[in-house]
Length: 181
Length: 181
Image (cartoon, rainbow over the protein chains, first blue to last red):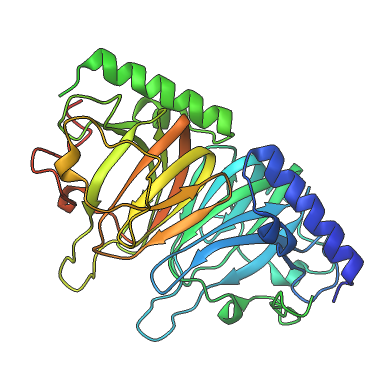
């Protein structure tokens, strides 16, 4: 778990990247940017910054911020009752992000798996998203993503989000809720 | 119905407003920005420019562009089978937009109903949205909106969109599909 100062710093950095992209936040939103270190305590390498604009029983919308080379680790969104699992569309707004999904592995994936976490990355079909590019992830399918050298801001449009139920390939991962931070 | 030249001009203007806001489009998206004049042939006053990023059986996401003082006319999204009707969240990204919904009418609404269309505007509870502000419209409820003096760019997050089924208060309105333009 990362400390208060690191969370505050990450929030400020994420807010600046959103502002540079042209995506305005209210002061309250800025103060509550979600900082997810996935319980690994190594935010700089494995982490994600999120602003959730709406999440109801029908749809969800977030803007995601990734620092340079930061990785959101491999996971899937499992079925929940009648829901086949979260389906989501990533649209790159600024910077560049490489998305990895199930499919023919790219011969030389450009992203580097975070050191020490190699066993927990299993899908390597690479999709590079620059501003204006987007890709939709079907429910219950493995995916992970990593920002390029300048980081990335990515809009996520999806069905209902239930982050606490996400299944990560890395058993060490805990999808830490934002409240105790 | 508006002509080809006016559609092209509106597309260029909308693309510039999106670019100024920081929202990148691919060349193909730019060439296909939807220009909706609602069949009134008076785009400058009653109209909307739209980019639909995704619209599937679960969720939809669009960016809307409104020119200065342009109005999206009063309508609702009716139930369709088991679907209670489209639910949507408007988030202002740049400029300013005034949204009118059912509820206590504002004593002096700031927006002006397009001349000649006065009988077809019936809800006057005003919600002003500046960048970072958002509001969610419940299914099957009347609403309309008008941009401020500098226009507006608004992200719309919603359940499945079925524009062709929208019910407009103004019986003259035809929600023109983009393809014949």
